[in-house]
Image (spheres, rainbow over the protein chains, first blue to last red):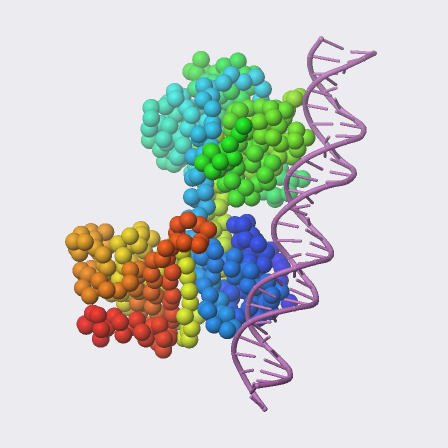
Length: 263
Length: 263
DNA sequence: CTTATTGTGATTATCTGAGTGAACAGCTGT
DNA sequence: ACAGCTGTTCACTCAGATAATCACAATAAG
């Protein structure tokens, strides 16, 4: 009868609504009302397979979120707001939450004057690695050296490099697999030096990053086998911080050897 | 010892993290790690009041979200990403969710050619009412007439009025309490006719909206007594759609009487 | 080698929410 | 007015998830 398949719009809608904190009944009720446009508890119960007697709770919950309007008649009639309004509501609410969270965490964060660290940290997942790259580049005060595959140079990273360059940081980017070697210069913001691939051909594909010679990151792409999310779990990185950190020392040496002028 | 008060940054952070779908342990673990910068399971357990043996699960959960990095040593050491990165991650994830949701709902939405409706719908909450106003104005094809308190003319509403005017809709806005009567002209986008308050002085304060003479909304501000959220639950609106809808008929008449030229 | 500490897994307790049914109120048609 | 029906609310059970505790294996330090 009704597909519970993955790409069914109703399933995805329910899934996302539940992610936004709604109960299962409320989510199913809402998609049913969206399909009906307007209906009674009975209608909803039939279409959403929600017990009729709980439709009232579900609609009350939805009303609190401003997603459903009620007609005070007998039988009560319910209607769902438009798709655009729903999207706008949740977008607004959750960006506000994210701002609140970042603000609160900022107050908690201790003053960490680039602590010297002994060990090496690990990250997995392409997005997660990109986040670390952005975070470290945002912290840069003097110098950024980045060697990366073209495919990993996402907008986030490019933006971070741009703002770093704007505040006077010496930014140098080099590609591992840029075919022409210079066509990528256009994607980089002003102030970012770009260098054609030199000796990087033999280096395992991924990224290499060095920030202020005190913080380094190295990543490789791996086959996404054996991981549940079919994609995006396909990059593994290690990073370290501090002048004497072993990874920092090694990567500093690598950059020096392969790119003589970095001393 | 530790405040569980409302405006404690740690409490708000935990609260928001849980809203983003993290378990209580994961949320507390994350704020503890943010405060520590770096620490072992023991450290976290002491500070976050999470059983030590559960810190490993909590950090695993956080790692899946890309919020924590792990040092593969014994004892394992954990570190939390920066506040900015955290905010960015969740902002991105949940705006994507909102987009997905809106898209899925859009596919479900039936072709509702401005159905004729008999009843009158109710909405409460200032934001919710604003959402309806925006929704209806976005639907306008010919004419929008809005009478509103100045305080209720939020950016959302102004934007909606602007885009409506841009696509050729005749937009007319009038104020109930604008002191000078014309100083608000600047806030309104081009193409929106603004009229000084005329006979609106006696009308209960709130908003009146008429779209294409087929859909109307009326709201009043009420004291937020007896409602749990101390504010924002302070506006109550009713709306209706359809040429013969009683509320539409009444408000059409009101607009005509009070503003002769709308016949 | 011994001991304290760390990591992993299994186990139990608690709680929220899904699902069900009974009781009450209100409308409708005779 | 009455009876039957529909609509609404409330109270209860059950299941799944999460929190919390414990027992044991692995590791590091002395």
